[in-house]
Image (cartoon, rainbow, N blue to C red):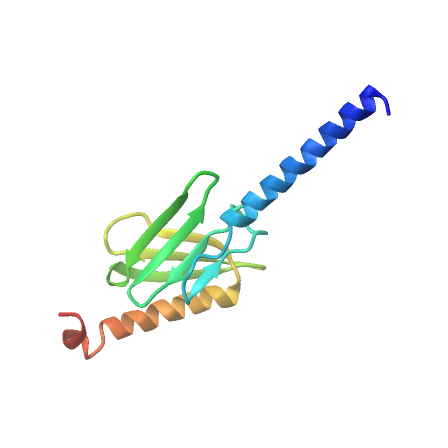
Length: 141
């Protein structure tokens, strides 16, 4: 084995190790966040190739979570501040826009499966109905 072959072997080995580390980081950063109702965007959609956006819907809030290379971007909205939910279905995926009553920018989630987008809207409406339902005084005083 010549010196050139040995150097080439080290370079290729190093590149494979680096690729494996990057793939592990991408998979680790894009893992599912904990929660019962978590909806993850498809990696095939716009802006979600490396780190897909996730939306968690809980009985009291909606959390929009986007992992990044360093850190994450997380936006939480209490259900009392959600004013409307818009589902825009396209050929392959659906986009969800959650408007708030607080005057801030709406939460825009791109690339969810159509059934997930419809389920997100249904859950938000259900939890809001429970929050503002007839037993509101007894629950939320």
